[in-house]
Length: 138
Ligand SMILES: [Zn+2]
Ligand SMILES: [Zn+2]
Ligand SMILES: [Zn+2]
Ligand SMILES: [Zn+2]
Image 1 (cartoon, rainbow, N blue to C red):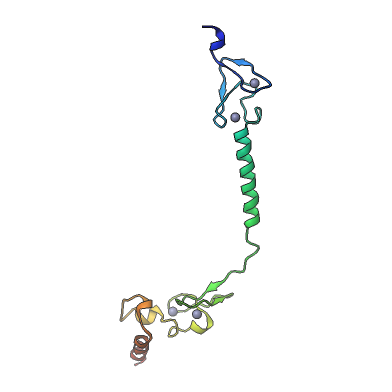
Image 2: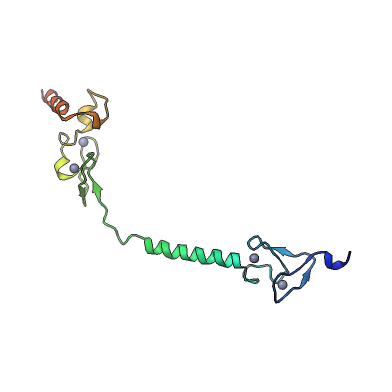
């Protein structure tokens, strides 16, 4: 066995220096001498590719940043697709509703149902709600 078998040659084409303690590049999986151990020094193709992608990611992230998007407040009533630019909260249940549904009666407000029925709102049919309203008004 000759000394040449110990260690490795730097895998950089322009260098090929023999090194007893070569540095392994995790990215391109090759060995390099002390001078070329850095990814930048041996122009690591894998590393460069990674950097490129990262920069592209950063760029695309910047691009996809919302342009001061107007915040919208969708109506909490199921099936209602109206959105407000200003939140209209129900003082009883704290939900946000459109103009038409802002009153507890019109959005089947939980505060009206909680005491009597423990069913999810969507299972309550209008007739029943009206009944509750009548009871509550008594
Ligand atoms: Zn080298
Ligand atoms: Zn490398
Ligand atoms: Zn609505
Ligand atoms: Zn409510």
